[in-house]
Image (cartoon, rainbow, N blue to C red; front, top):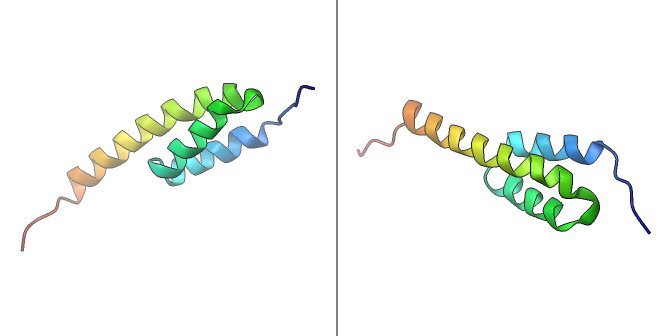
Length: 69
């Protein structure tokens, strides 16, 4: 019995990835990879999560550096 998944799962994953790339995006991407019907979406979500997370860390370090008091 094959399940078909609509694009709403992809869009939901992309929104979660953009809003919180590190934890939620990685967890959701890992869950998508393990589900047979969502594996294709997981292959899209995980790289976007890693790249967006790296950009977010870089931007936060560049524009909001931690300065000792």
